[in-house]
Image (cartoon, rainbow, N blue to C red; front, side, top):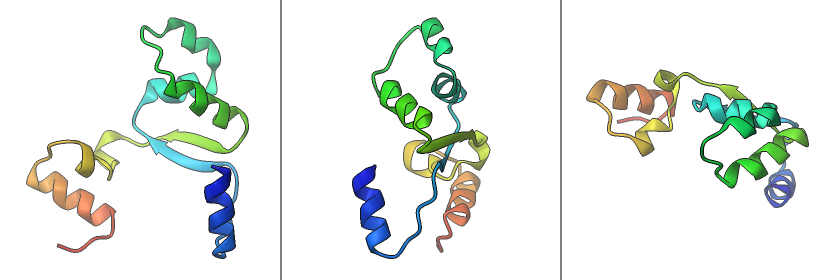
Amino acid sequence: MAFFQCTLEDLGYKITLPQPLGMDNQSAIRVAKNPEHQGRMRHRNPIYYGFREEVEAGKISPHLVPTVDMPADILTKALTREQVEKAVNMLGLQV
């Protein structure tokens, strides 16, 4: 993250920490904010370890975004026409 932060700052963008990160994975948010939940997880994905470290360091602040309001779903899921149109509008794109 430090490389991207320096690069963006070199381009004149002001970076404020922690950076908000919208997610629809409630389990990942809970594990990142409270490591005690990790012991109850059935499958421990190694990616959560680095994510939790960034949250503890105050670099990332995860928050819940309901699935219906997640514009990234257009890239990861099969959606109805209405859902695609909504995601396109949330991304600020034109059809």
